[in-house]
Image (cartoon, rainbow, N blue to C red; front, top):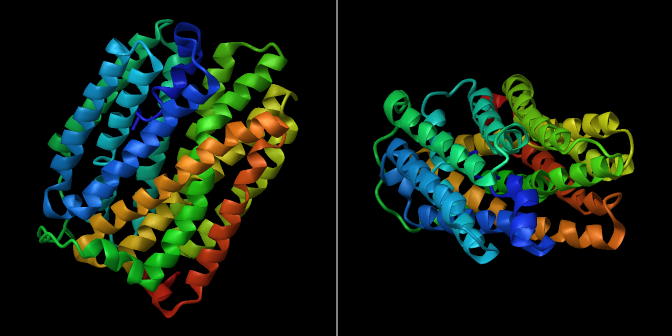
Length: 381
């Protein structure tokens, strides 16, 4: 998943080399989101994670994504070509994330929240990695992008050679176009998806733009650019700790409570992070790290709810639809942040994300009150 922000991480270099506008910089990330939405939509409609081996789907799409990302590093010399290649990267990544969740679900009935939390924690570290590589790696952005592509190849090979389906795996399902619609008719799954949408309204807009805010804030204080890049890696990477901790707690206390608390914390950070713009860099990074840990901590638990409440035969399809809808929503919130920043500055730009986690909390508390919530975490809701 290090492919995801490999374009965003090198925006400072692209801005100088390509005379990149702020809008074009945003589209380098937005195009990945749109590509992922298209990929997950096609995957869900054709039940790909359920009718073919998720391990093989993972490996194939990881390597294809790496090839396209390497092409971005080697051949892109303009924003239009770069954005097109980033779109294709996102489309191939649609075959990585949902199948990985399905593979893990076949290994765990008990402790599934922790298992998926570790997975999403790994995803979070992967997405943060390009910022670290950009901060401490080569001065040539093309070299850094190529190195990130090699990491994705390694990930695909690891899954192919060292991962197998778990003891709870079901036989391959038959193609059933109606499965996409059945997901919306399951009340419990629908509420879990609504909670996920509230969470996603905030998550990727934060991940996309917090490095820009940190760079701008630290430039006011004349801090090192390397500090800003490594700081961005730490802030996003803290989400890995949040995911594992939330998974541990959710399996013991309940998924709806953990997701609600995580969204309450992250929603509060939306409101106060701007107050630290231009302030002491350490204070800014501490608050941003708390936000980074909480903003993704709940992510795996929404997926765990879907695996527990949905049709076991078509878990892959249900997870793919969930991610498709969530990432479609992110295309709006990602686009809104720079517009808000132009109007009110970084001090208040992230405030517009706060309604998302609030909506998510209300959805998960509603789910908690349903009888079918007894299926979640073996009765721990």
